[in-house]
Image (cartoon, rainbow, N blue to C red):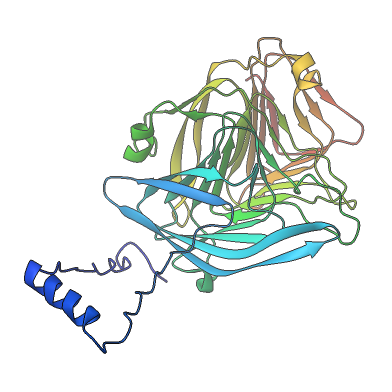
Length: 379
């Protein structure tokens, strides 16, 4: 399996040579001489671009720019709608990389698309950052270590959009076929309706380790949801940290009698509500990243009228992890509604910890199932 000791070779540089004036003159005469055949136009090779849009990359100083590979691209018609179908890979060549996306629409990876991120190490992070409006993520996104053919899941995929993130279907009505929602599998996932306070702080990586400095986020005005949609069964699965942070969090999705699922096999799930926050991470196990600390710097400014709910967090799907942290702070003291399954099971097989920290009330319906060795409230 590829690892840090065997990095992928750097791409070869293409060298060009300019023709001198005499050579240019000779070439011109040869093309215009009587009886000479017509000049053949040089072929123009246009590199493929991602189906969802384009990105600019900002890798950490000790790495290089990512490589994009389009495996396939076509289209499919469902009823009166036509979708672009594609399978794509982005190979990361740095421990941390920011991809600033300019999308063709408000959807990043539709229900018929797959995007694989290829990492060198399990602790590497790629940030997909959006702006301009809430972004919907509907397709399949995987993180692999070494290559997609290795089948080794790993690496950390982050999503940032201050305006909000939604993991579901494409938000349209389908009548001819069942459309699955977002399916994300990686070593770790962070979805935050916020932005970095400093790109350089992220690229430096000083937020990882026992003596870490919190990585700061701000402008958290949007929401993060797995929305209710009769066509959607969304799931996010990790080995390490799985975190959703925004002004409001909803895991209400799940169509066809299948609930939305958030699952960390060995790490922590964080559901946080804040306008500005900071976090630190740690490495564990095979080199995955997990949550070390989470702090709320300023509360969410979202009101119940704006949210359409009196709750800052609505949990209607399944949440399964070694440990679960639910932390909220809002100016209007919006509460937490538990209506799904929360199961904390540590890697050793024993039940883990569910930690609730909120400035408001916690409501649990009769449908809620909570399983943990320890349940703490504002401890």
